[in-house]
Image 1 (cartoon, rainbow, N blue to C red):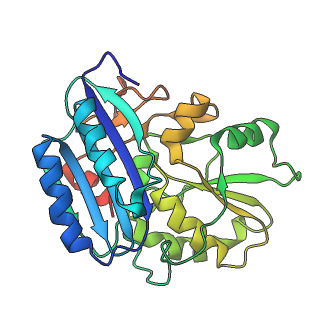
Image 2 (tube, rainbow, N blue to C red; image 1 turned 30 degrees about the horizontal axis):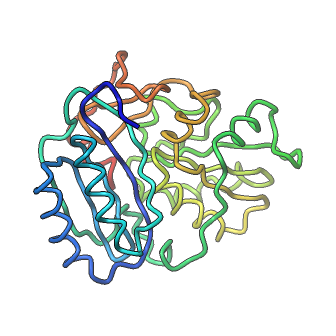
Length: 265
């Protein structure tokens, strides 16, 4: 769908085995440069994580070419629009992990995915105060503390971690508050809560574990932000989006460049 604003912004990720990630890096960089795109694409042997911006035709041409690789055929990027590209340059990098947890046993490309919960279902559960089996529901924010300060679900668990690699230890330190509850882990776009939910499933907690499908941004798109208070920090110069997926006009805690780099860890 075309929009009145000229710049299309997309974000997406997929955990899938990429043993050829170094060769893929060169190919994807060349394509993006030719189409004058800006943003960041992270590659690792466990998958891809991308944030790109440009004209709608160019962005969609890059995605269409990517989908010619069967490993990415089902990629479905989230879209938003802006007056100008929210990135200064193009980066395509190979890393050890597309989202760093420092927990080698958690490989979503090689393990069964934790159950995903649709945004509309979470909104309904939060409205009724329990899941469909009558169990209490807790939303678990897997993001860094400064991101949470921009906004989060009402009553969400926030362990004030400073980077995602601290999440496993935080789970060990706070197991008691998770026992006997239905846990819904969430993050910006889904990538961190996908790893988090797998880790939580392995801990023998007395209750089901879900990841919020598509993260906060998909929740905004499908529910309008019900039961969510504030904005959502994003990894570009827009800084934060409101529940309508527009750049927030009420930024009161501007993120430093150090914070931006830290948020991706």
